[in-house]
Image (cartoon, rainbow, N blue to C red; front, side, top):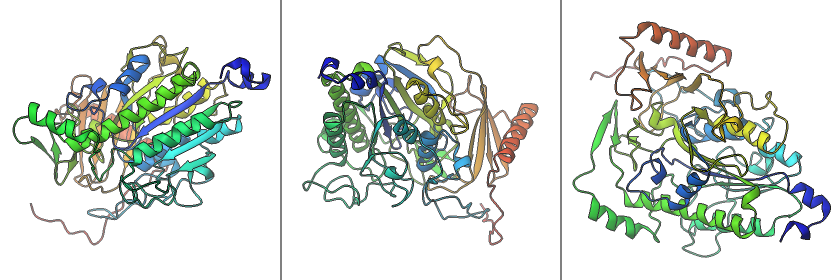
Length: 468
């Protein structure tokens, strides 16, 4: 339906852009073809990147899911919202006691969905939530609807029906979760109130464990692996863990293909409904790919180091794409460091709404970067992950300031320093050869932690070191 078919007030409303936000779970920085993968295939996402701007140094605010998800919605650092671990978190301890944090996103926190809703937007949510149980669902945080979102981090009951999702009843046995969430999103686009702009937030459970083959595509990747990959999967020792050093898992690749098809289907519906020219599309992942465990994870983030759960680049750098019609220029690639807290102010500015820096206290609008002409004020980025994680990560924190990156490992009472301009793979620790820079960044990180009232890990009185 064209603009002429709408009443005058609806025509006025359509001047405000719509928003589609794709959030993928555990998708690694190097998992897409447009980011360099040669085994995985992502033609629809690649096309989206080619039509907008691709950020090569985009960061999740935490190397695990729930904190980053909170940071996206609120524009606030995980420390500020007191969600610093996945919910409910790992109960493991070692040299330090478990740091306790919230098990839900506080209702006092204001999400960009709430702000958009207050400005007359319809707000639709489908998929993974993982920011609290009933009483703290998407519908309690500014979304008109919630299809499939609940307290769980993994898909309840798995990816194929009959699943056990309390907010999504399967229509038939064997139904595939990602396809269903896509159908629900497309149904929303078909049946929305055309007099209002909208936010569609599609938050995939893919590609989170359990790694489950997408049956429609997995044979293709099994054949591809057999034809193109030789020898046993190489691995890299990472402290007490092991990292996968090659992308060669057909099941994981098929899960990415399912997301790619979904993105393509939603974007095709925007084209069909003639909405694409007035719809901002954002694509992001909540943390790095799962690479390092006590055994190799399902993907490799090389040339970046390690993965989900770790504060090395492979754990916190994420693929990020934005297409804002009339703002972004097609095919741009940005090397400016940006972070998940930046989405909130960026969306407000693109919607023509006033920025609210007291809300999105840790984000900066990226609109000046979207056409490739503007600049962003340089800032330090901080990560605080004082928890133990199944990836074999132990409590620590890090700072990136310019090209310099410092990581503190509390368990081992050690610090590492890297220059990301010359060493993006973090292979050459400069902490000993650059003692002044190390001390400066360490002091800056500690000052930030103090200012933010970050919860620091406390010694475990039961801890007994094991001889190695």
